[in-house]
Length: 477
Image (tube, rainbow, N blue to C red; front, side, top):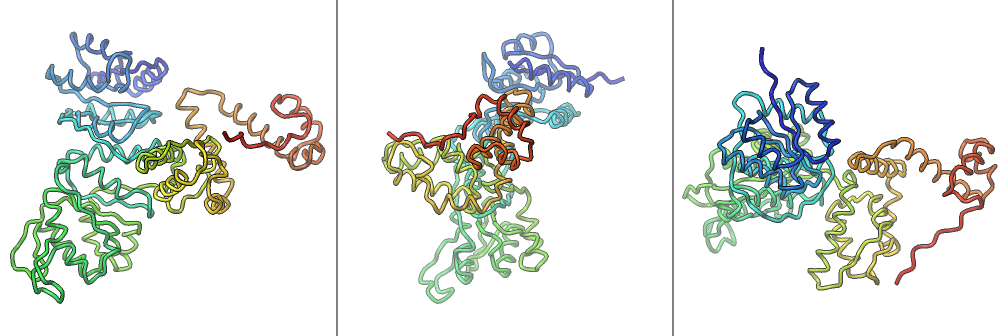
């Protein structure tokens, strides 16, 4: 009978160790737990497991240092990293160090178990490559962005083609630059071309270059973007707008790896990694016959789907603060700060222009807001007016979802009871405001009996017995 796979769990949080130990044992693993890197290093002197599941931030050392320790001792076992503080650079660094997988907290136990089963499968081992320290403009704590970070990390040792999809302004070029920056071609050029911004009759020459006299106005030889990007990455933005005839030529380059300049006879080698992006649905365009299916599959080796900003509300505050600081540094202006109530307003907006729209708003506020703090009234009316275009129930549910995730990640309990108490308090307060303090009318609006409303009010110290006074914004200094 096969022995259960032995797993070591390393985390300084006793609750997390307890949860993981119970779940993994129920799944048939033999589990031992440690609270520090030092404890693991000592245990390795006597034996070693088939896989290690470790937090990155530990009290005595970086959990990723275990990868180096295992390599020095010539122990080939997979390491799975966990963290509650994930960003792109950390994710890429973890994969380049040689981790088997990288998980963000709070994690899904089924996902952890699935990863460990793959990790202990026969023939699996970790690999290591030199770590690269680089910065990135990509930010996000939302699950969707964490998955983007992991994908970029997994691709950091590859130069396969990638298709990035997402709405206009969602950050497709930023992701493309991050893929280039964290790739074996990082020391080569990054060359971008927007297929929608160049007239169709000029796009072929822009991509492949031309020889002198090949068409009217071609007074000299010119290198195209494929030549400019040699040894690096060519980013083809808005690939869905590329004419069909040019799609055919692009397909040949991707398939054969060589091309001719327009009007040329010399066969040139295409030493580039191609990353394409579009805000359109290419599968629909394939069905309509306006995009080649074989080109679509050639480009779509790896697919990264970027979420719109309205679907990553938890990232809005972080992005807004970063953009505001960046603009102040760029323009040499004093640093300004968002008030919490201003961030709350930004989180309720639909952001049709996505991250680009938020970045432009921060630029405007950095220049135009009169004080060091940015208040809700500083946000342009035309921006705030967009809030009404988004269903209020959706906004409320999004904020509740954000709160619940935050509380669960922090180990919070009794979420239903606390949320229900807060909900009743807000509803009663608003109903009393609406009716001028008349409890009979307020009870009717709330669907409660007057006596029930009175009892609830008496239990809520935060709800005034008289009609609440109109709130004022904090004084501006």
